[in-house]
Length: 164
Image (tube, rainbow, N blue to C red; front, side, top):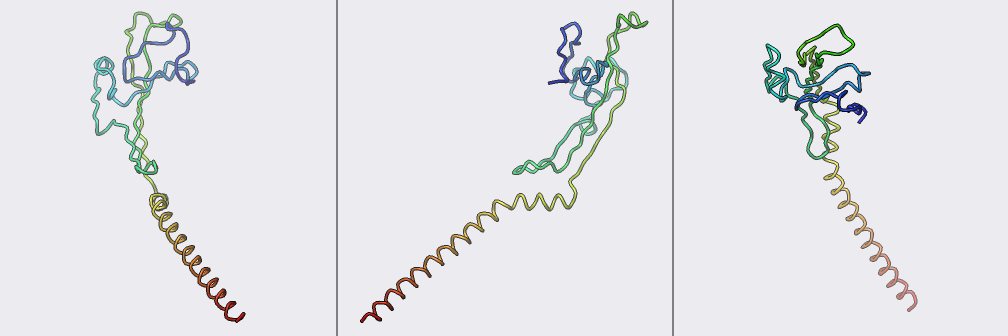
């Protein structure tokens, strides 16, 4: 919760959906995070800046996960860093419109390596392997139990024959 604005409401800007205030995490700098081109953000941000063309294919954040283990297989992350331009009392800028200005955006893509994919396959198969190992141990235990009973009965018969 350290990155959420905890000051009074006047110091925390009111933001429309789609933009995160990262100012508390950046030593008070007016830094805000969104998807590139304000994808999935309120239309107000997109309409205030020329050239914003959000696209689901280019700007969506996606994670592909293995459903049983939750191991991430592929991650495609795009984020945009924005600055809030407005009249601040301690600056020479006066009568400027309050607008969110995109500064830059970046993309990071990560795919699982073949070695980790093999480990993930093993992790998926472990429950089935465990069941078959349990059945095998149960079978060996049952076989040993039957051999023990056979030996006990055979020895008991042999002891009875020796006594006669």
